[in-house]
Image 1 (spheres, one colour):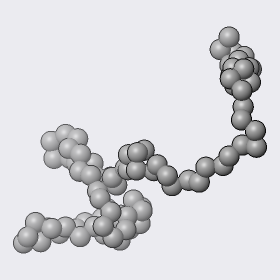
Image 2: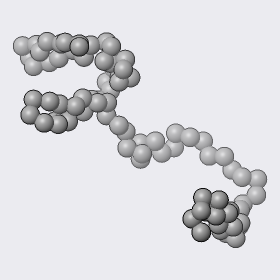
Image 3: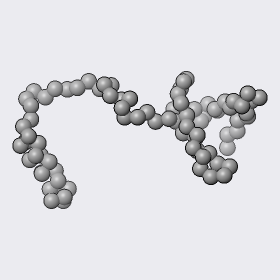
Image 4: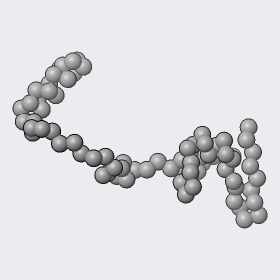
Length: 84
């Protein structure tokens, strides 16, 4: 069990072990989720997928793939998974 104290300003220092466990750094956000009376879930804030846009460089294919090739590939994978 790890304990922290509330300051006179209502602030709490998150213990180092908890910050490391949640992989929190300076200016990261945390979320408080009330679970039931007297209990709260504390977790790191998850970034929306939209925030990841543009982080990866696009790799261009040598030759564009035709619609027919895409359809065939999809059919093969579905068949492999037993979806057809």
